[in-house]
Length: 377
Image 1: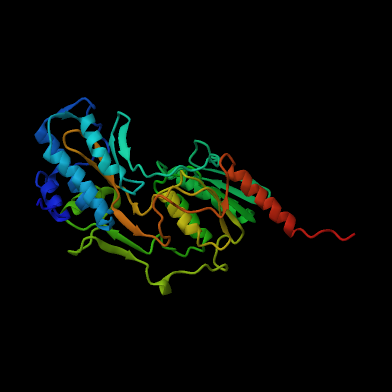
Image 2: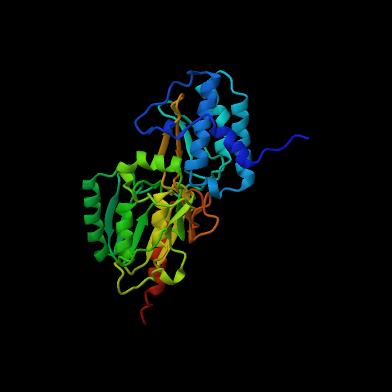
C-alpha cells in the first residue's frame, strides 16, 4: 500500500532545491520571454523557490485549511517530480492550478511586460454601479449646497504635493457640509494614509483599529524578505521571537476599543460611502474605519473582499523565468467574518446598471422631504 505523504514531507521535498539567498526583489525587473527555454533542473529550482515563498513568506499559508494546502502541494510536487525542459509559458501554465484555488484576492504570479499571469479563480462578478466621479484623477472634491463630495478612485502613486492638496481640500469641505458623499468606487488600494488621515479626523482623531488581530511571518525566509523591503517599511515588522506566525498587533480586547464620540468627531452628519467590486485592499481599510461612524451608509454593491491577506510588499523574482510572485505578508483577523472574496455588503444595494452616486442623491432628497414639515394651511 502506497503511503500518502504528509504536508510536512511534501514541504520538505519542495524546499530541498532552493535557499533563502535565492530571493530577489522584482519591482524593477522584467520577466524573460514566454518562449525562454528552461532545463529540467531550472524548473525544479524555480518550483522550489516558488514553494519557499508560499510556505515560509506568504502570510496565508499557516491559516489555510489542510485540504487546500495538500492540493497546492500535490500540484507543485507533481511538477517537481516530472520536471522536463519547457518554456516559461509552459511553467506558468503548470503553476496556474496552485494559485487559482487560493481564496485570496491579492496573491498573483505575473510575467512582467508580457501581459501574462494568474490570480485566484474564485473572484466574484459584481454589478456595475457606475464609475468614480473623479475619473482618471487621484481625487476630486466639490460642494453642492450643503452636500460635500469627496471622490478618491485610487491610493496608489500619490505625490507629497497631491497629499497636501487633498488634505487642504477636505479640510475646507467638511466644515461647510451637513451631508458627505465619499466616492470610493474603483479604489483598489495603495497607501491608505491620504484617506485614513481624513477618516481619523472624521471619527474624532481616535485611532480605530483595522483588525482584531494582525499576524506577521517570522522565520529566516520571511525575515530575509523583510530586509529587502526595509527601506520602505522600516523595522516595524522585525520582532525578536521564535514564534511563526506571530501577532504584532492585538485589538481583541473589546474593553480597549474606542467608541465613537460625537463631541470629538470632525463630522457628525450623514455619510454616504459609494462602493463597488473594484474596492479592495487599502480601499477596504478605509471602509473598515468609516463603518465606526453611526451615520455612515454604504451605497452600491459588495466590495471585492481583498483584505485578509494584505500588505503585499513581497514581490519576489523567480530565478530563471523572472516571473514575479507577489504574496501578502500580513494576515488580518478582521472584525467581519467570511470577508475575503465577499467584502462589505452595502446598506443601500444598487441594481446592475444603476449609478450609486445618483442613488445616494435620491436618498438624500427623500430624507429631506421626510424631514421637511408640511406647511400649515
